[in-house]
Image (cartoon, rainbow, N blue to C red; front, side, top):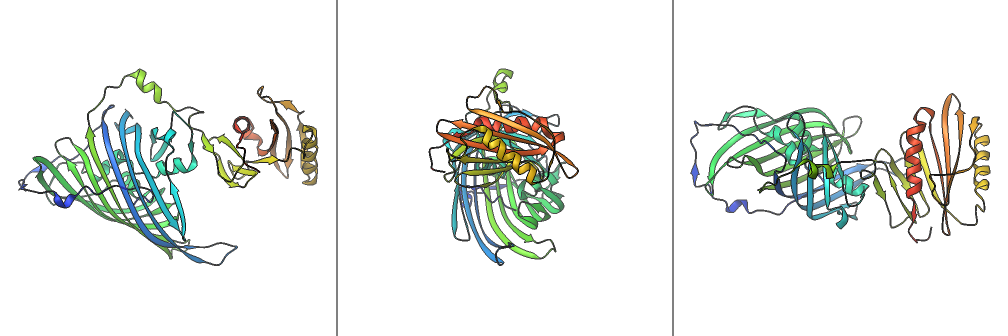
Length: 438
């Protein structure tokens, strides 16, 4: 199905003339190859509309109306290829990012902040990992880029052999998954066909249509998607220059019944730009690390910000609290406290220990209150406990920043203690008050 978060401006295809058809008996080799330094200007547009059934234990079932559109314009430079010569790293420089959608009458808008409009996109299998060297991405920015079509991954729409006019082939699974955003692809019956090869403005251009269905699971749950579209392939520069997709996503429940339907149109225009020369010194600038791949949490409704690793997920937030989960057993609660609540850190430790006894946890060992990482005002303490038959690690922080007091309460399994302790310590040291009341 069409990417729900993206789009492009029309390029006036109706005005293109097809003055000369090439011979039908010819065979054509239609494929893209990439090299570091290749550059493209890419523009996309998306428009969608539909509805889905919302179910909740607290509310009656309700049909939610959905509308959305986006326009995105950026330059992409290929940085590196993997051992199979697929693009696994590129640099994107965004000119325009406009995304708006309406869910049940509620308007939502997403964009990239100016400081994150130059970013690196890693490709690991079907997974996209964007990060910026200039500023940390927020989760919304990460999600926007993660769900964008990666044009270099559409090679499966091209035939693996030379083909003649009207010849058909099955679309590659990776290309289908890229177009549908299905995290799990259970079945695919998408067929491509070479419709024509014509001279367009004295350039040989192939038109390839594709049509079919795919089923699988994405963030909306089980669904079936219907794809109907075409691409233009510039035979002179050997690259995909345009894509049009009309997509329909039929959402299913666990019993396989239809619970929603979303229809959309997606276009992608891709112009080849002059290549640039890259050397190892330049490429070394675009490496990910534990710092530049962290995410930034900031909210208009919450009185503090912090950084966190991408393996963690912010599951709830309010004016004075935020909750993060790493797994079913690992979690963290951050609270901005009233300064008068804990006049000493020992008071917080006593309160935490009272909770441990109330929950009938068996204490195996405990740590004294101590300073953390030489950060002024940050102290922590911990317990190793057993909850029923499970050995857990409980870690607590008190962070005093000027007149602000923050507490952090976390737990994780003993076997993950070292790694998660490092994560939580990093989150704690990154907390900053925003000046909002909380």
